[in-house]
Image 1 (cartoon, rainbow, N blue to C red):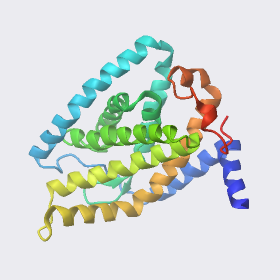
Image 2: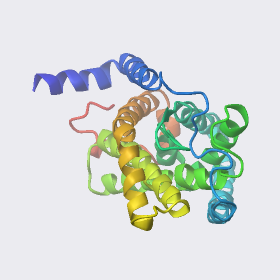
Image 3: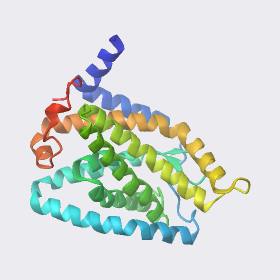
Length: 268
């Protein structure tokens, strides 16, 4: 009981301290990371799979561009918040830990933007984030951008968004919806990456299934704690936005019925 009370006091009354603690944990975890670690690196996937994932991703990007244009046209004042969502994803996903050969584990940061602007808009922001990281940080690649975008900018945001919506329908506490959305969006990103690697490199014994189990097992060691950390950090950031950008969140219909979902969480 005492632990529970201290935890929620830290989350909702001292968000700045929790942000510092969460960032410190992430930095410590990535300390041994080599500079060449990346999501799925340039040239690692066969050409046919690069093309396949590009073809799957492009329709989501086009729909996302229309969604962003529609939102900005209706609410021009939300451009800054849109930039915040993109910057949040850029910073978190740039913190990487070597994991599977040719790839790595890192937070994704896409859950927050998916909750605020929807999964289609986050597909565009996520793709931009991955493009800048590939060009400026050697994190990922151009040929593998379609595959990386599909996992982090398509699957992750859609899982996060519909997890959040399901929690709202079930009248779960708002903090729980945000936490689960960010955590599951992160985890499913890496399930998708494992799927992509298993399809491209099936095991000699056991084929696709054996390869998928191996990749997911290796990812789980680093990704499970990272997903929980990202969920907690997203709750803190969302709480700060709810406190200082309440009008914008109401315009996005994110806080329209928040009074039903905040019981017991202290989120005001």
